[in-house]
Length: 444
Ligand code: GLN
Image 1 (cartoon, rainbow, N blue to C red):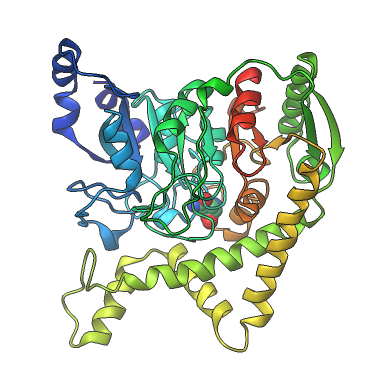
Image 2: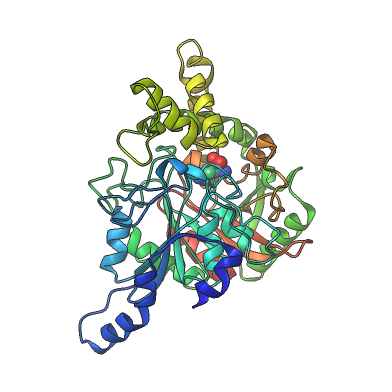
C-alpha cells in the first residue's frame, strides 16, 4: 500500500513482484503462527538494485539492452537474504550499469528524491536510497564502485555502507569495474545496517575475489562508546569545492564525537587530488572489458533488422546502450589500447597504489577517518546531466575509498541550506566494519 501511495511520485521501482508484495501480509501471518525457527530478517521486505541478479525476476541494470533479461540464478546475496527469510519485493532503479551519480542515466526514467521531488536521489543506487527514505521498503541493497551506495544515502538522508572489498560476494552482481564493485545495505538506522550486513557477509567460493576472513558479530559492535577513539580528518576533505553548509555540519558532528570522549586531528591524504582521474580511467577500462559480453547473443534484447553478425552486434549495442555507457566504453577501450596502455592504464594503477598507501599511513595512527560523503547536498534534476566532468567531480570524496578497498559508511548529519540532507562519511581499516559501525551508531 505504501509503494502504491508514493511510488508514482518517487519512481524507485523498475519491477515490483506484485504477487509477493500482495501476499506479504498473508504469508507473514502464516509464518508467525508456525513454530519454525525464524531467520534474522524474518518477514522484512527488501528492494534490490537492478544490477543484482534475481532468478525469474527481470534484472535490467536500467539498460534498454537488458529490458527483458530474466536471470536463471540468484546472486549469492539474494540466497543469503532468502536464507534469513527476508522478502524481496522488487528491483530498484539506478544509473545504467551503475554509471552515474544521479540516477538520471537510467535507460527508463528518473527517480526523484523523496525529500523534494525536484531533486535527484543521487546515484547510481538512487532507487535503493529513495525507496528506503520513502518508507517503501525497510532496507535495500545497492552497489558501490565509486560511491554509489554512500552518495545516494547521503542525498536521501539514510544510512549506506560500502563494505571492505571482498567482504560481500559479488557473484551475481553484474560487473561494472570488478576491482572496485562491492554490494552493501541501505537502511534507516545503523543498527538495521549492521543486521543486514550480518546476513550478507562471508566467503563465497563462487567469487574469486571474495575474502576468506572471519566475519564478526556486527550488532555486538554497537556499544555506544567512542571514548579514546582517534579520528583523522583529511584536510583535502574540507577543502575548496566542499560547500560551507556541508563543512559546518561535519565540524559540528566532530564536536559531538569529541563530547563523547573521542579526539580528532587534521591529516593529509596527499594523493586525493588524483583520485577522480585515476578512478575514471580504471573503472572505464574495466567496464569496457566487462560490457563486451552484451553482444545481443547471450543476454537481453537483440536487434533483429541486421543483415549479418557484425551488423547485429553494432545495432544491438548502438541502440541498447545509453550515452554515458558508450562514453565509458570508448574511454576505457582507448586507455587499454596498445600505445596508450602504459601512459594511462598502467600509470593509473600506480597512482592507485599511492592512494591506498595514503590510507595505510593514516591508519597507522588513527582508528577512523571522517569527512563529508559528498561535497554538496542533492542537486536539481537536469542541473548537471549535460556536464559529465562536473558530475564526475562530485565523486571526489567517495572514490578514494574504493581505490583503497576500505569500508565506509554514510550517516545523516543534518540539513543543508536547500533543506536537503547531508551525510557524514566514516571510513575504517580493511575488514574493520565493526569500528565504522560503532562510531556511526554512537553518533546517530
Ligand atoms: N558515480 C560514479 C560513477 O559514475 C560511481 C558509480 C558507482 O559507484 N557505481 O562511476
